[in-house]
Length: 179
Image (spheres, rainbow, N blue to C red):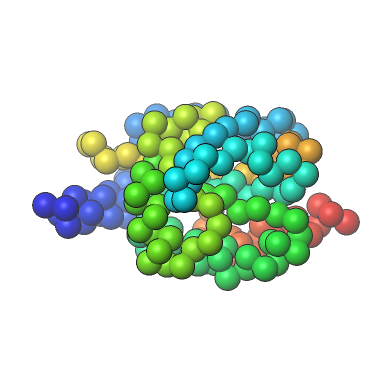
């Protein structure tokens, strides 16, 4: 039964984007606006707040589902570039509608060390205007990224992320902004 639900979730993520199914759409936050603060639990069962990263750049990326192909590629690319983010005084934080237990399993399996935050009630997803898609009872956040400056302002927004080179795009944006 559990495998069937996981398969159903993967199929939903894979097909919903192409079918354009949406539970609701929201408005993205404009560049230059103050990033809404939040507190959510991480894969370490500890609360993480945006305020924890004051004075740092924050890559706040929203993704559909743990342990799916695109989300795994995106996470691996952020992990691969973690030293570059550290050198740029940048925290990488992922948010999905998955649970803390799902994040724990994903991080363990994929050896991810940055924070993944559980937002099953989509409080932060809604606060940032990230559309929720789904089929029936299976819901997931759209793949979008916000870059938040050390002053807490939205510096860049990527509404339609392509996972293969997204980490490089984000790093280039941070490097350009620091000049």
